[in-house]
Picture 1 (tube, protein in one colour):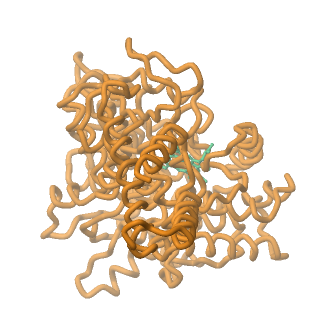
Picture 2 (cartoon, rainbow, N blue to C red):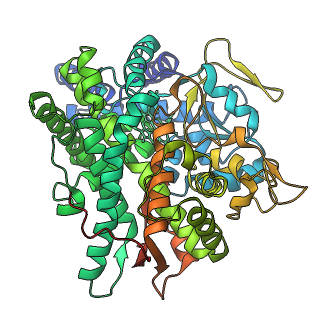
Amino acid sequence: MYLTVVVASVGTFIALRGRYVRGDYALVALVAAFTALYGYLRRMPTPDREAPFAAAVRYFAAYTLTTTLITVVYRLSPWHPLASYPGPRMAKLTSLWLSYISSTGKRFDIIDQLHQEYGPFLRIGPNHLSINSSSATSLYINMEKSEAYRYPGHNNAVALFFKQDAPENHRARKRVWQGFFTPTSVAGLIPQLDRRTWELIQTLARRQAEDPRGTVSLAETMYHWSHDFMGDMVFGGCNALELMKNGDPHGIIHNGKVALGLLDSLGQTPWLLDILWHVSATKSMHTLEHLAAEMMRTRVKSKDLPEFRDLTSYLLEADVPQNELEADSVVAIMGGSDNTSITISLAIFFLLSHQQYYHRLREELFAAFPDPMTSMQMDELAALPFLNGVINETLRLESPYYNPRIVPHGGAYMDGHFIPAGTIVAIAAHSVQTSPDHFFPDPKEFRPERWLPEGLGPETITNKAVLASFSFGPYYCIGKPLAYHQMRYALTRLILAFDMEVEKEFDAAAFRDGVLNMRTMFLRNELRISVRKRPGVDFEKLVY
Ligand code: HEM
């Protein structure tokens, strides 16, 4: 019987090597195999009169252990296709290591330290490489997304962001979204952005006035602002989110962020996510999915549509089926609100902790807009060099996103290395974005002047092409132009409206250390500020 166990283990290893198998299906298959074995043993006389159940457990444990042992030996052996790539032993053994370091929110830092130890090509999973080289931007031109982007629960609906088995489905859907992101269409959203940003200013002042400490949570209020604007942009305001007025009773922000964090960490071990999808560990993912579906259903039924065209109107015009509208709405809710608002909050954090840059930006903005109530055009904001420097510098330091791709048939060559087909590869975005080869001097410091034509002096290196914040290639961020405008606009309005200060006891180093990145960001410490209205600003009378 043990010979049969070994043969079964070797057979399993050969059949599954390098293949992705759904974890929930595999679990069901294992339970079925155990049941069949037990049924078989019940009918067979066992020589030593061992109970059939105990014998089934023993054989099954032997099978599992043998299969695991063969896999472990293979992964650490010189015959593994990635054997020549260095990395921590645990990473070579199991993708659980990558899921674990992802769940700490400090993956970017851990991977950066490992790159310093092992070099630019780092094995961070049994079948997974992190690449700390500008050449890795080319991965994004023609490689498909890894299984980490699979819609949890294998909803096969076509939607942006999530992995599609047929890339042409992604291209077709991206064309529909592109209709919404044309300059004319984005221009139609400007009055909404204006309205919501004045409401943000009122909300910051109101919340501060109501707070016993006399301060306001900037990051939380920015999230409320971006979700309210997203509700207008995606659903034409039909869902009456109104987080700035009502807070977040349905937990859309919390559940959205936890869901994204789970996707970012468990997604690196897709078989485990397949299993956990069926239990309460992934509750936030289900909650986000239900909230998004509900919002989309309300929008589809609504007769009370705004004058501007929202994203859903483009999807409906293209006859996108209901289940795909709902899947796209998950993407739109998270894509359209999360990164933009946290980037603005972090830009303000950097400015307030580097007063010289805060003053420099104020000078630029006060000169460009002497009347703080004035309207602002997109091209005027896009032409302000220091404002753009502040935004790019914040993105450079605080968007260490992890975007894994899969090497296609035939493999790939990079910097003299051959990477076999089927390997999962990702640019080490944080390492590249903070490397002295690409950003010099002071690559780890917030120095927005590096983005100006004169830079930080004659030695300056600013390799704009490696900024991976919006990714590259066919899966680049479709919202990039809108996101830049939102960030420029909100930052400018806030700086024109208020003198801002952090709380007296604010610890900038501890705050920065407490920024956790799992594609979305979690802040361990609050960012509370105080705001004081500037002369000439009169927002109280504006009614929304
Ligand atoms: C600072 C703000 C933003 C940042 C840093 C950002 C970053 C990114 C990144 C890195 C990706 C590629 C993901 C990957 O390959 O893993 C992406 C995709 C995407 N983003 Fe953004 N994003 C921002 C704002 C927005 C906004 C405002 C929207 C508007 C709805 C948006 C919608 C999307 C969509 C739909 C995708 C998927 C594109 C595709 O699959 O082709 N993003 N974003």
